[in-house]
Amino acid sequence: MIATITMPRLLYVGGGALAEVTTALFRLGARRPLIVTDRFMESSGMLARLTDRLDAASIAWRAFSDTVPDPTSDVVEQGVEALRAAPYDSLIALGGGSPIDTAKAMSVLAANGGHMRDYKVPNEIPKLGLPLIAIPTTAGTGSEVTRFTVITDSARDEKMLIMGLACCPAAAIVDYELSLSMPWRLTADTGLDSLTHAIEAYVSRKASPFTDGVAKAAMALIARNIRTACHEPNSRAAREAMMLGATQAGMAFSNASVCLVHGMSRPIGAFFHVPHGLSNAMLLPEITAFSAPAALERYADCARAMGVASEGEGNQAAVARLVDELRALNRDLKVPTPKEYGLAEARYQELLPVMASQALASGSPGNNPRVPSADEIVDLYRRVYA
Ligand code: NAD
Image (cartoon, helix red, strand yellow):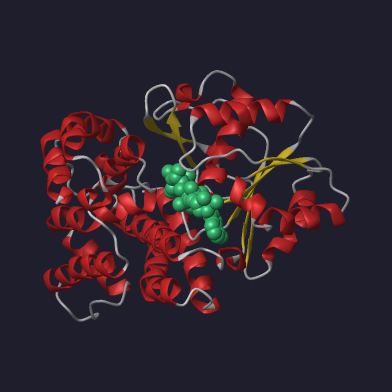
């Protein structure tokens, strides 16, 4: 099998890496960036940490700060208008997955025209757009290294997956110091998101020896540090491990795809506005239990990489430990069930067939070791509701 690997051209990784932003711009031949960020980045002074460096290098910039969590096609269109207002030659995204995904979508739409839904998988994106430097502040979606963007179609409330080389940032600046300000809940949700990426990449039918290595490295870092990062937010060692793990998990799933958890998670996010990492975490233990019989050894490897099963332990026992650990993580990190989160039961039940068909249409369940039918997906949605 030949694995095709897509990655940014430049990666700066480590505490203080933000200082490399001007070098990154120059190396990409760019001089005039539009920054894509959100209101919190602006008000918290995080944006100023970036723009001070651009000012010091006499780089003219403007910021589009109107991105929203779980970006919508409407916001992307506003961003494209901002992009057309001046002859920008690059984009810099600063923030969590939402500003990064917005910037990717702006680059795609500005270069190709039409509507965001025109590029929904399996459609191709004909042209590459402006180069993007992605600077994540959560650990994280891994979007800084992935060839995906996830945009909600404002007209249809559908979380669309858009995929291709045009969505891969040209450069990523992975500076864990930007994640030190994350509050407890955000640390837990985004950390669980990256753990899900690593596990799903490893068990995916599209996994390769390349993605296996980074997926296991990511699982080891995240599983050993997620509780510390939540309970000791100033632990630089835990923050550094989580940020690196999130980026490695991004490299893994960008090139091996995600599976059933993500397929089922996106409709929950789109219809009920549950944060992405949280909806993944709600599903992860149950879907792992459902899928594991079809790939016992792969899931057992996950348990070993996470340090919850020993090397010599049999696969069946290791998988049992994995499912136990995922349930324990949800308990320790206070992940609610959909019911506890407040998803109205009648609406949830009513939407199950639509959510199942959107999950299947995304293609992600087809990568799962056990490929579910629509009825099985509905059943899994029912089981996790609790
Ligand atoms: P986010 O970008 O939506 O941010 C959530 C909130 O956290 C925002 O209010 C933001 O201002 C705040 N925040 C961000 N960094 C902070 C910091 N350091 N300190 C304090 N507050 C901070 O959150 P996210 O979970 O990173 O991104 C979720 C989005 O990413 C979803 O839309 C999801 O679909 C997408 N996603 C994309 C990919 C991909 O490969 N493209 C992968 C996974 C998820």
